[in-house]
Amino acid sequence: MDAKQVLDQVRSVEVRIAVIGLGHVGLPTALSLADIGWHVIGVDNSEVMVEKIRSGESPFYEPGQQELLTKHIDNPRFTLTTDIDQAIRSASVLFICVGTPQRENGDPDLKDVEALTRTIAKNLNGYKLIIEKSTVPAITGEWIRRTIWRHATNIDTGKRSKSPCFDVASNPEFLQEGQAIQNFLHPDRIVCGVNSEIAGRIVKLIYAPLRAKIVFTSLNTAELIKHAANAFLATKISFINMVADVCEAVGADVTDVATGIGLDPRIGSSFLNAGLGFGGYCLPKDLRAFMRLAETHGARTPILKATEEVNMQRINVFMRKVSEALWVIENKPVAAFGLAFKPGTDDVRDSPGLNVVSRLLRERAIVRAYDPAALESASKVKPAVPGQLDYFDDPYEAARGAHAILILTEWPEFKTLDLARLREVVEVPVLIDGRNLFDARTVIAAGFEYVGMGKKVESTNTARRLLQPRTSSGRRAKSIALVYAKQEGETAPVHDVVQQNGTAYGD
Ligand code: UDX
Image 1 (cartoon, rainbow, N blue to C red):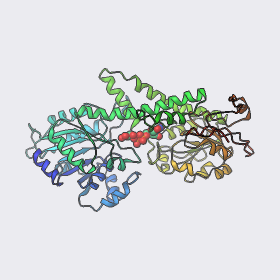
Image 2 (cartoon, rainbow, N blue to C red):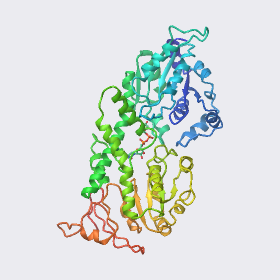
Image 3 (cartoon, rainbow, N blue to C red):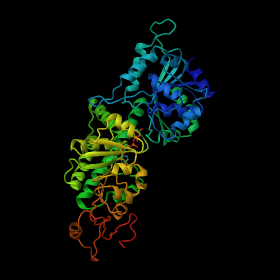
Image 4 (cartoon, rainbow, N blue to C red):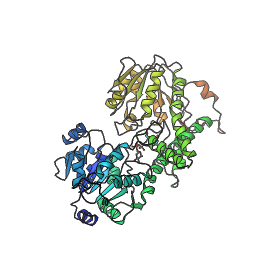
């Protein structure tokens, strides 16, 4: 089939789309494309992975994915295979969704992309639109094109093909783990980099059911949009974390600062949650890859260097709070709440929470860890060491005998925990909130000492309270809650001060 015939097939919704690589990008992509009516072939070189999906079980936790899999597992227009050659031959649109992990020097490892490209070159039985969805550095599309020209083979003769019929497009994903299906089916925008008109028309038709804005541009630009988008998100997080340090230095409240600046639509309130910093498979890797891309092409990225440096310091900032609150950390049980790199996923890759656990173990703390979804994946990365690192599927058990509860991932369900019951089981009522998840007053009212990030929360002793400067009305005004908790569990009166929305000073 030539390109025109493929376009007609797309119009008649008969075209076959192969999604190659069924990981955190490929599987949501394959299922979502099937869900909007396309004929999808899901391909992965892992027999185990394909068998698990074929059995109707989602191989990783992603909200909505299991439901889509159950819906489409018997759908004749959704098939699964490990036979990549066959899949390439029977499809006309090929989504590249293989992994591009980070190499030692920070460059993305593109060997799987190249290997797949050579396999495609050997299976060109008519026009193919090759769509990059994996996160790749700019110029990768040009390399895919060059590699196809170099290795294109006429499958009938087995000889070199002098006129391979294909196009390459870049269609980066902006799927957040924990919202991937939602992000795919309701995108803010779709970015498509193409060098041919017909390729653009095919992509437009494929995404037509989503009725979303499509940004058409060149290949290199589309590839760069992905890196720039993630680098900007990372920079926004590091910016608010830098501000958090300043807040602590001057006695301000970073959550209020974030609200105050975020209401300006030019800034926007999302991604302004200060805390332990960003982790996961994407932001750290894409930030580094973007810096490396710029470096190897002679461009400087000082802002990104600072973004990475601020992010790497977050664990130290947090660990300083732990030692300030516990004095001696060695041989003290601490409850670590949150191992996933963020809520809504069981993914612990480059998880700030797990990095804190590593630091605690290095300080010889006794870690009692809990996570609503990531215990299994965490224990694979960091096997339990009874009495040193133990995993609990019950937060109250994890908190039993703890000298501090550490909030490491912003799981919403942590906010529904029964603080009074936690107060009962802990040895020392200290809560160090690495994600500013809790309202300080609520925690303090429950008899805990509360320590946040970028909040000058004082909760340890009367002295500090007495040292507070008096306001003109002779009252102690502070931008956040203040309490004094006696170890015997008796709480002194809470002095509530500034509400977020600026109403009501104190009682
Ligand atoms: C990211 C991008 O958001 C997504 O567009 C891209 O396609 C893939 O990479 P993801 O890795 O799922 O998605 O995580 P994201 O939701 O971006 O969070 C990344 C990290 O930043 C998490 O560790 C999270 O806890 C942290 N974060 C996020 C903050 O510390 N503060 C914030 O305000 C937001």
